[in-house]
Picture 1 (cartoon, protein in one colour):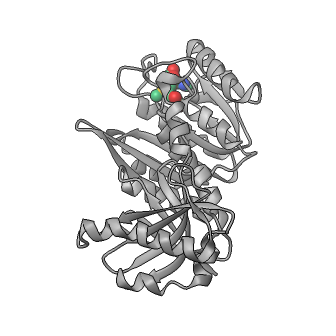
Picture 2 (cartoon, rainbow, N blue to C red; picture 1 turned 135 degrees about the vertical axis):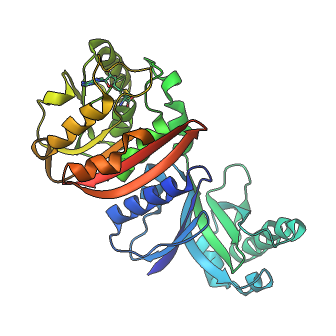
Length: 340
Ligand SMILES: C[S@@+](CC[C@H](N)C(=O)[O-])C[C@H]1O[C@@H](n2cnc3c(N)ncnc32)[C@H](O)[C@@H]1O
């Protein structure tokens, strides 16, 4: 068994932890994850790094822990074998330090990459390339220990930013932002090939993330105008492999979905044509047994006033995750997941 790490972004730390834990559960169930601030450490038979880096919206970097020292002086104990395990002779590399402790002097931190880099060069014969290294070596400095790791940085975060609503083919302010949409798909445990429904699909913010995961987007909305927007946005990502229908969430004509990932209308940006948003969600919840396959999951994001956990409970469903995120001072959103 090897030991692995994940470093999450500082924004929405609880959401980021939940995202990583759900994804780890998909590829290596039952593993124990130990968290220390933004860092997760776990042992596993399989290496889930590539999967996590390609899926998680709130991940900064992830990789394999090669060596652990009790102090900075202890870093010199890393063996030649361990260094050769990190970098091959024909590869290029860069060493970086990430400090999660404010106990260590910044001058000492600055010296780590040059000392470790010189040792790797001497032992492996590999060359340094600070711009585009084949291998990224990071030294994570914590209060209790120092870790030397072979790491992969997230490239997905930049791609997700390129899919933000204002950069989509068709834009409306009610569209779900791509980062949160991706996190919600991950919290629902969406895997490639699965059918994923957004019954309030609007311009397709969530459905675009469903498509980039390789799952099949199915959207419904009351408004033809929004559906036309969703079509344009989806076509630019997946061609024609999606389904969109016009309809009312109170009478869903859709069955056999593996997941529902959605955000009901709120605020002034999206119309409900006079219905209360809470009533619409309550109606959706009563139909879940007809829409979702056995073991199917639901992930909904709503305003805190809606009290989604209570609604899940009233509908006789089992609440799995309940997370709150502060969008700005006046707006708190709740994200819940449930399974039938
Ligand atoms: C917050 S927006 C959805 C954003 C979308 N989920 C996304 O990922 O970008 C809410 C949508 O609900 C739709 N809507 C309102 N009432 C509805 C109803 N009774 N049935 C279906 N859709 C409805 C609105 O037209 C609007 O597009």
